[in-house]
Length: 289
Image 1: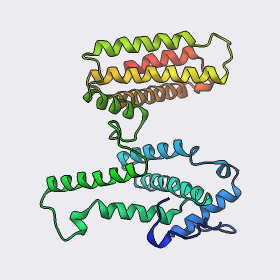
Image 2: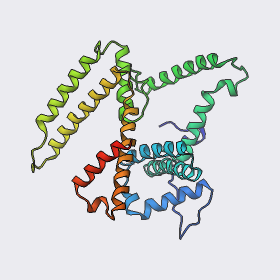
Image 3: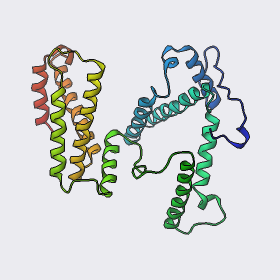
């Protein structure tokens, strides 16, 4: 485990829980103590692991992006806090495991920022953006060499950044295409999609059929293949699968909001209405778009 020079032999001590009923402050140490208290006394927080928290970290990042786009300052502060919570939560768990703490994370981040900005912190100033980019690539090459020394060799698809499943799928396909692993036109991608859908249909449960863990796992695999194939079709059509899906998400929100508004005028809710009633309003919502 990489440590700071001064912390190499330090004994890892997780933050101590705050006692009593705490008051909110702007002090990071008080936040660490509050998180430690939650890990000690809250049943939900106690059972969390670094792996179980992964979906929440992704969700909070998206909610922050949405708040920034909407421009509500109070919402932005709240969502930034939720993102920070994920960092604090993970650090607390790793500190409990004697791995590292928030100080190590902050040190690593500062080291990276200083290392990657020599044009800011070194005497030799770089003249323009092109020179900055060239120096950046040189630094990344050094970092990649260090990763290889740690047993993590660089592969062709490593340049694909983390993101939503759709974003990663399309980026991976684009990267593989540049290496010659692709169909010439969209027809091949469509044919592959149809093949994947056929395989999914073959294992769909019948009405009333129960599914064991193995069946669910098989369905998840085949469904994933279908989504990946659909993303491939989008890519071959020069469409952004993420943007297309978000358009559908916003459309669904809008239409269902219309349904609820119309039902409210009748003194009803979605829970007290039939599927037929809501489907008729769905069609009406489409006419109002």
